Length: 101
Image (cartoon, rainbow, N blue to C red; front, side, top):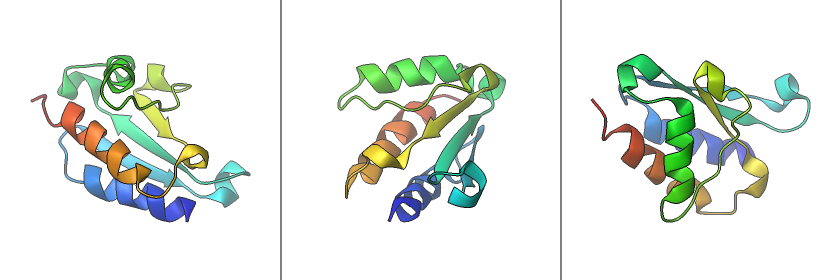
């Protein structure tokens, strides 16, 4: 279930310029799958930290893992996602990331 939700988010982000995703399976993380959203900050014209702030202050607020934000990476943790939340997270990401050249 968690992997399916993360895959749905990755599919929505596919093709956005300056954005890549990487699904890290349970076998790699040792706990649960994670989805890294990797930003080309220079090409995007904004930092991962700025994207995270935009997600947090928007409606609805979305909080992603920021541990690797200095590397241009935000992480989607599935443990807090319920059915349908993946659609909301993906839509918020697309609205912020697609609005920049």
